[in-house]
Image 1: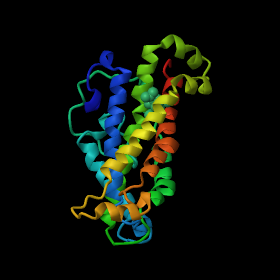
Image 2: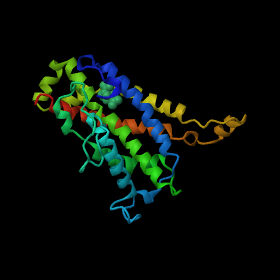
Image 3: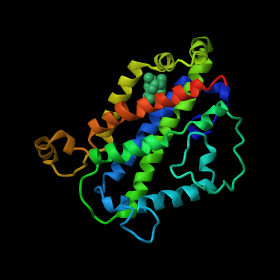
Image 4: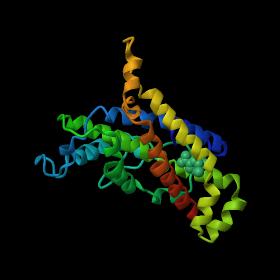
Amino acid sequence: MAAETNSKSDTLTLEKVREALIKQEDTIIYRLIQRANFPLNSPAYDEKAFPSFSGSLLQFVVKETEALQSKVGRYENPEELPFSPESLPPSLLPPPENPPVLHPAAASININGKIWDFYFDELLPLFAATGDDGSYASTASNDLDCLQAISRRIHYGYYVAEVKFKDSPQDYEPAIRAQDREGLMKLLTFVDVEEKVKKRVEKKAMVFGQEVSLMDNANTRTDQRNVSETYKVDPLVVSRLYGEWIMPLTKLVQVEYLLRRLD
Ligand SMILES: C=C(O[C@@H]1C=C(C(=O)O)C=C[C@H]1O)C(=O)O
């Protein structure tokens, strides 16, 4: 299991899992800021732009990067899921020694397809400027960095669900036996926590994405600009990313996991 929670299953607590999710916010926001250094660069996504690759440059970068990462054990962690799983080479390292924390059902839940679609179709145009500066390889590897951080956060839902189940099996078991998705969704949802998450990530995006200037009149110039232009990534886009995609999909992973938790 990952560094944040690599202790034994009996020490996995909701508090610790939430701390891990909070740390992952930093990674996600920094990676969005990195990607925002480049414009959209649409030829990176065009399957016909570079005849030397069988698909797009992005697909090539994803496949080759994931193949290397697989050889050094990345996908031995349940919350790390590849975007290009076809014929990935096996890990060359010994398997992790930690006893498994999760129910084996976790291995059957992978929503990377949904993550890929919302990232490219909806999110990217909200924070990358239009244009083409020719930096296609950097663009593609920054996209993969963003996708991996978001995917890991969302599939961390396995641990959230496991710990919630272990904390109160008497609440979850009837809904699991009845295969009641709605009931499970209600049980695992904490509206107050979600509101705090949205506010915190908005604030982090403001702090991490400030333009730093040594000029005395920097504030005056900033005041004259539109708020969302003042930051490297619009803080409202980050809070929307969480509110519309990351948290609903983390909950979807939780529901899917719980539905299979008694199998
Ligand atoms: C992850 C949790 O489950 C749900 C999803 C949340 C999230 O993705 O941040 C926050 C609160 C819950 O509604 C949690 O309870 O911490």
